[in-house]
Amino acid sequence: MTSFAEFSRVRQHGQSRAGRTIVLATLSDPELENLKLGIIVTRKVAKRAVVRNRLRRRVHAIVRKHFPADDLRYLVVVMRWGAVEASFAQLEADVLKQARRLKLQLGA
Image (cartoon, rainbow, N blue to C red):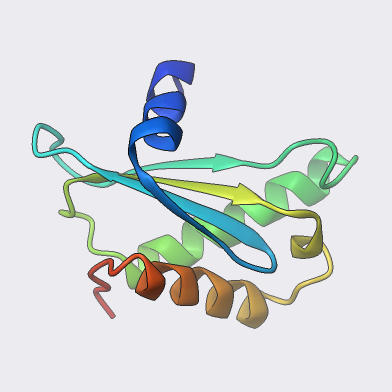
């Protein structure tokens, strides 16, 4: 997911839940072919690009592991400042907790 219109549509019309390290937003769309993931990591969260990219890679790994690829929805993950200090396990636990709060179907 790359366009501003998609991100803003999910944020305005979808549901979202905030956790300690992330904000997870979702919007179901039957016209999609598969899950569309968008990750937002601002410079406020981490000044260095290396750190921001590491957080993105971690979220990609978590989504690949736990969410079915054929789910017809948009998924937006907004990283919060606590994500930088969080371990992979803590980040994974927070993503799964917010997904359960949103009643999302988890694959694994």
